[in-house]
Image (cartoon, rainbow, N blue to C red):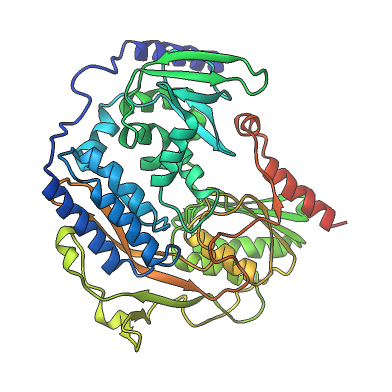
Length: 490
């Protein structure tokens, strides 16, 4: 009875949403034209901020190549244009740095309009092997589109749409997974927003679909959906998506022989404990169970606190180890700080200027020799990862790979193998266009070897979920890890 009542209430709520207009009022922010000279000035501020502040700017893209990209972008600023047109030129140039912590944001009024009033593309997507599939739909009148492949939007081919998005999406190095993952899942870079901000596509949307199972083609014209309406529909239709209260969890399989530790984020709490304390308790529990295999799931874990990645590793090694080799700032303070609200100089007692002219962090707890934690886990470790495994998560993964303490299952991770540029960062607001540029200041160098300097951590056992797996909840990556762990135990 309760289930039927909930379903009835949900249907009524969706019918109410049908009456909500997604076109009422002014949807598009006032995009005034800005003359070429002020735009050129903004571009130069952005370029200077990155060249001066980003201490790893040439890690993946040589200076001559990046200069060429910036010069080519600057030449396009030869006419008046609005802030979004400027954003569409600046974002791909900045993305050539290949740093996932560096990015360009549309002006605040555009961001607010995308959040509240602009009817955006009404579908969530998955990007798999260069194809785009419907994952969810947010119009009140559900069309049962999940699983269909998108081929055209407003007469533009999906290959062109996807290549434009990928070129403007920040990601570390040449990881093959981080940019498609972000386009499908991550906030400002997610597909519906980028269709508007990067490609200028507005509702209504004429979409050509293809059923991957039957090959049948279908064309629909769909209205857009505003952020508030999307949220109301999501709360009813996808109520199971509530974020877990715990950022980690521990379960056991096969009578305790296999432990499964899921770490959703390297921050916050798990089962009311600070995550560091939870790791202590989890490994005591694993020790008490006598587990011989441990599966660690860090898929979709975008990172968090540096020290928590090191803490997790410390239970898996039995000798003192190095985690970071170096942490570097270019200088302590920059002229472009005047465009970054709240930017503060790097504290003098935190760094040491060395012969290379750079300022090296001397206070970070992950520097120097680190000690293993008890109880040590000496059994076989299997790690699940994907393009959403990033930042602190990849620091943990790289060190684990270098220590040869795990086998990796799933897809290539999202962060650079040898480190990243992140930590302290400032948001530079360009004075004429109001476009934002996020500039990270500290470059991390991990104490690792044996990885590809232009890629992320690569899987030992590659498993790529299909769209049908994702929609049905068939976790093929976890299933493969469990199979490997069980075979190991025989």
